[in-house]
Length: 241
Image 1 (cartoon, rainbow, N blue to C red):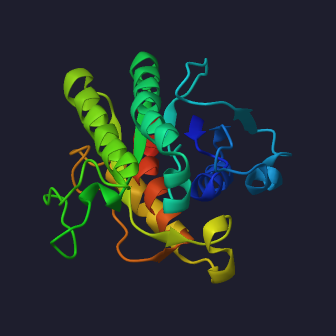
Image 2: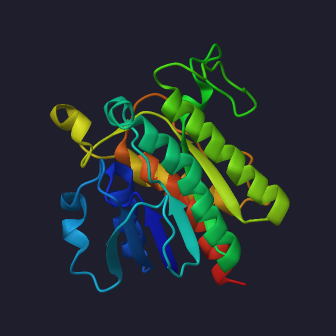
């Protein structure tokens, strides 16, 4: 399949690109390199099924895709506090641009959200029917509230246009390519499990309920696997149609 990964030169995005290539898909990696790095995707450059485009996804651009994984956004406190306006725009305007492309192309879309959607939670662990405890004007609001808005936009496209869309809320994750935790990177284990769970959610008959979440601090493999699993369920289901 032709797949677009926004934020593909970032931490989780770069591992997702690699996983999708391993599974035989063609990948267009789109990143403005605000917090991502070309070093994260150097190993994929020689793959004929991989293309990198340096671009800000808040601005329109032409592409063909059967699935869109929208991961573009600063994700660490260092990143979004240094770039608060850019964070708000990529999760609002950027999400709108990707949703419109998915609608026009009848493509699948996965929006990467965050545990920060719960704000400063009063319930532990957080269930998906918990609405959170949020501060819309606090120092983290640029990230928390823009991710919540991105979820709202995704849900409206699902309700209004029956868009085949999924939302995943990723909790604290670290591993290779995570520059903020370079001194703490342990062996990678988490990403694979997480992406696979995510893809399973994507093929669920209830598109946006029960999506996989990673609690506590996770190694990278479960996070990537969660996203891929939510995505793979859609990809497998579509390939059989």
